[in-house]
Amino acid sequence: MNDVHKTESESTERSASKTSTRRADLRARLVAAGRAAIAEGGLQNLRARDLAAAAGCAVGAIYNVFDDLDDLILRIGADTLAHLEQGLAAPPGPAPEPAEELLRLSRFYLSFARANKALWRALFEHRLAGGRPAPAWYLEDQGRLFALVEAPLARLLPDEPAASRALLARTLFSAVHGIVSLGLEEKLAPMSEAALEGELERLVRAFAGGLTIRRTGEDPWKD
Image 1 (cartoon, rainbow, N blue to C red):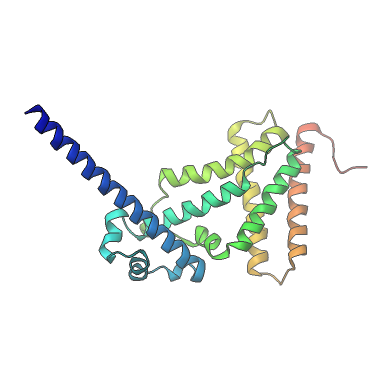
Image 2: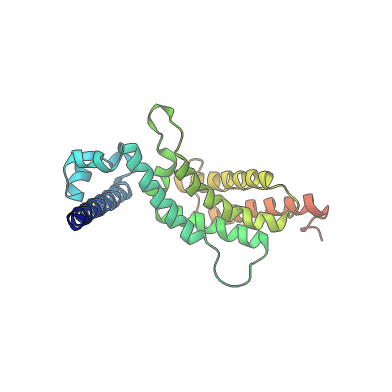
C-alpha cells in the first residue's frame, strides 16, 4: 500500500513539474514576443492576438500565465531593466574616481537608450490601469539600478545618510534622463551625438563638483 501511495505521489510531482515547466516556457516566449513587438513598433504595437500567434498559443493562454497585459508589460520592462543593469555594472578592476564612475554610468545610459529606443521609451510610457502602483518586485528591480548610482555617491559623500544618498541618486538620474530624453527625442532642437554627450558630461561633472564643494568646502574646478 505504501508503494502505491509513493508511486501516486511521485506521479503527481512529475505532472506538477511538467506543468510548471510548460508555464515558465510559455511566459518566456510571451515576454520575448512582447519585447520584439515593442522594439519594432513601440508600446502601441503590443496586441494580445499578435503575441499569442508569435508565442504559438491561444489568446486565453496569455491570461493563464500573466494576470493581465499590464503584468506582461511589467515583465518585459523588467527584462529591459535587467539588460540595462548588466551594462551598468562596474567592470573589474580598481574603482575609478566617483565623478568618472558617475560619468561612465550616464554615458552607458545614453548609449542604451539610443540603441533600444522603443524599449527604453516603454519603461516610462507604460501606466498601470486604474492608477495602481508598481508591484514590490518591480520596484526592487529599479532599486538595484539606483544602487549602482548610490555606490559612487557613497564614496563622494561618505558621511551622507543613506536616505539622502538615495534621493541624490534619483535626482541625478532625473537630470540625466531629462537630457537624454530631450536629446534623443529632439524636443527642443536637433542635437548631434557629440553635443548631447558633451552636455551630459557637463551636467555630471557639475553635479559631482557641487557635491565635492559640499563635502570639503573646496571648489575642484578652481585654479
